Image 1 (cartoon, helix red, strand yellow):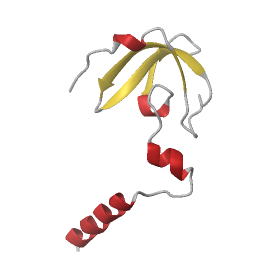
Image 2 (cartoon, rainbow, N blue to C red):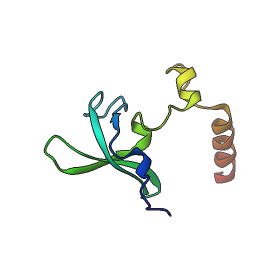
Image 3 (tube, rainbow, N blue to C red):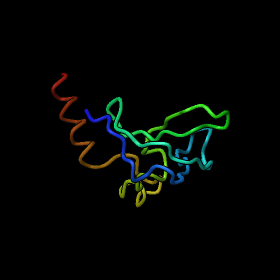
Length: 93
């Protein structure tokens, strides 16, 4: 597990893109970007000035998943994921 910061992003701005996050469409300055708790996280100061973090995949820091972008809400599951789910269900019988 890496907790080393990615200094190349420090000082840049990002936008929260998660559709259900209360900070959606708000922009913040990146303090640091780290791999913590098994995921990449962006650290920033919130409106109250407190250091906060958010999963990087919920921001513009990470490019959108190509499947999600192309599906545009019309397809919720990847074919391969459904095959893996079916295999798992079969094993659990």
